[in-house]
Image: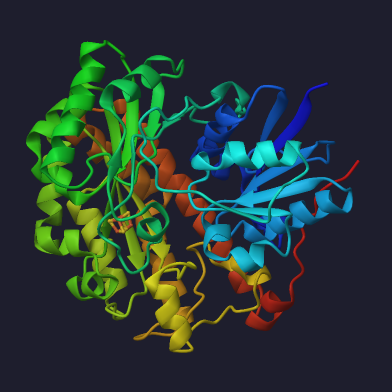
Length: 470
Ligand code: SF4
């Protein structure tokens, strides 16, 4: 009889469900393609089920082996699920970026921890489990991305609102920004998949909407730029007729050939990491690429991308040591004045594995240190450290004010109207509008929740999303 492998993407534990807007989460949720990649590498003889708890409920079901992935804010939930299965005598494996940096923490809650990129060791994990020789730790390598398995998308839920087909084309980043763990996790070297293999994968995806899950679809340097053009051109030549979205660095605004082919190949939205409109903040975060382009050229960059009919989401991080109290008003002014279509505004968050975490820890500035439970607060919407030039409340209030000023219904409608006039891209404009409304609504609910509790109550609040067991 086939063995059963359950793969779980846990939801973040939230203390009060009434502040949890399921529909807004679903709009913004990206499919758990990372688990589908591992499912594809699992040898024959296994029945595999993927459960993404962010969009579906998890009820205990029998399995031979349970694999759980976790980001930092979902780690407490991953541990709770893992313990529940272990109590039933079912072995568990935890992987993902959080467990990779905190292996000694993760192993307390699981039978096995996979450190780093799991693809190179996943078959060893399964093989050892089958022989009853599962080890406590496996360390994946930064292997070549040639011949990456085609993910088992057939195992992914069809409840994702945007029905995005997730495709990864490259890994690694040479930049090592202070707040980001990508360089430590995926390495400094930019590793790109062969274009023809990416095109083959795209061709096999039914969904019209594609999300390239790379940190930047443009990559870094001239060679990567040529590869991006080759990829987009290939999509046109093969007549794939996709509508795609991706994250990208600001350099794309100054690569007209890339923008031209991006548009021709169906690009309907780019998320660009502006990070800050303050060069002091960019310095503090070591965001060298943005400093090279210069904040003064951001607005022109938005216009250049719009000129190719592509709407964009600008990502901003608030709270670095370079930020002073006037940064909130200046950020709002930039968002509205630059006509950037959608915005993602987050609070600087020191994730394990980053230089930011190490320095704040050394300086004694971390506010939430009751680990692992407190990891749930490291979700980019809470202040978990003492900012340098303002209080935690001022930082929270400042970001909330940006959301109030940029994502209310009238303002979002006005922004959508301008987006459509500038880009003539109806679908991208609609997504930008939904994004603004969804992220604004999620933020305001979180803010109301934070306001409803004093800090001491927050610290005492019990985690109230139990794993239901039949
Ligand atoms: S934020 Fe972007 S550019 Fe900076 S290290 Fe992370 S992936 Fe690289």
